[in-house]
Amino acid sequence: MIQPIDSHTICAISTGSGSAALALIRLSGHEALSIANRCFSKDILNADGYTVHYGAIKKESEIIDDVVLTVFRGPKSFTGEDIVEIACHGSSYIQQEIINLLLESGASMATPGEFSKRAFFNGKMDLSQTEAIADLIHSTSKAAHDIAINQMRGGFSKELKELREKLIEFASLIELELDFSEEDVEFADRSELEKLISELIQYVDSLAGTFKYGNAIKNGVQVVIAGRPNAGKSSLLNAFLNEDRAIVSDIPGTTRDTIEEVITIKGIDFRLIDTAGIREAKDQIEKIGVERTMQKIEQSAIMMFMFEEPELINNMDVEGDLNEIGFSRENLVLLANKTDLKNSNQTLPEGSIQISTWNKEDIEKVKETLYSTFLKDQSILENTVVTNARHYEALIKAKGDLQKVETGMQSGISGDLLAMDIRQALFHTGSILGEVSTDDLLENIFLNFCIGK
Image (cartoon, rainbow, N blue to C red):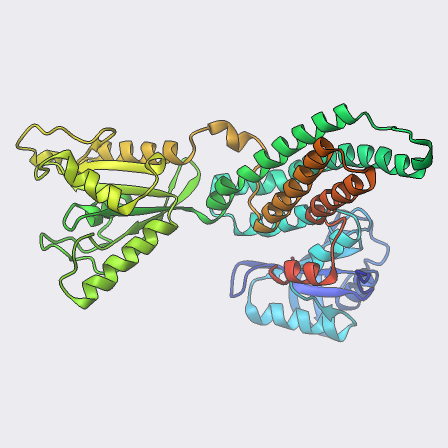
């Protein structure tokens, strides 16, 4: 059983570490106002919620800092409890002195994620919404931010709750049949249930299918730049970044290790990986570099394969390399480089983009191609997108449970066995929202939160 949260009042610094212009210190619990009142120059015990007070934090007669103190009354607060937020100057010394004073006055130090955990236990948000808080804090692109905001505001939860309501309704009817099994009564229309289960399988499968986009958007779309030595891979990376990040030389094999940098295209982060040229290694170091190239290719969502157009003998040179690599053609961007040095008309591989890394318009064209290769359907971002691996795993398990129900209905198995599989589907979808969870699961989730959130 999940244990209820402790009733003690907690405090923590909610802003980043180090010195800054301002910092925020947060208190939450039934003694939040009385503890803050002991340290504040004004009486706030009877202060209304959503009010702001200017005064000093004092230790006996010594003034630690002039602060702005905001009062939130439970249950209309983030945690559902009384909350006091103290905005002080960002000196590390000041922050620590205020924390020490609050601890001396009766507060306890918050553990990682404890404010969000209290919000969950007090019914202010479900588990998927609290996890979205962490995603929002760590979002580095507009797309990641928008997905986290949508999930935090309950977009994902709403869809899951609707799914669960349909399952619960039919599960209830089948359970009712079991109570009247001796009368041989069917309360559930089996043809309707079959239709519903089929629709739910498609829905869950579609939702789980967004994870490949959501995970990439959350962590950055991994793009490997591959090709033979001296094809212009490092020049392309430098052109994307508009700086000399990678060493460029006419000597083949200059790049021996991978170099990774991030660029943002239309609100989505792309993690570009410059790699060693693919060829038969001439020494042990180059061999390791080529092996790392192949590893990065296997791990990447998109491969940009570069070749030199002037030196292209025929398409089979490129096709042979691509066949040997075995990367999905659907997520392949072919770049015929050094078109500024073109000295002959070549028949290029189908789908090739002719570029020169010195031409800014060509680089913009490649960026557009990268974006459209990753996000073939723009409408994906307008709907619910799964970004959390835990949610994805639960959806896959729920899909398996529903497929068992579908197979069972087609083979005519008894209602009690159908009910077991439906209950399992409900369990797995409920685990996403936190309606079904364990202490270990919750501890693992909130352990990864910041202290003070």
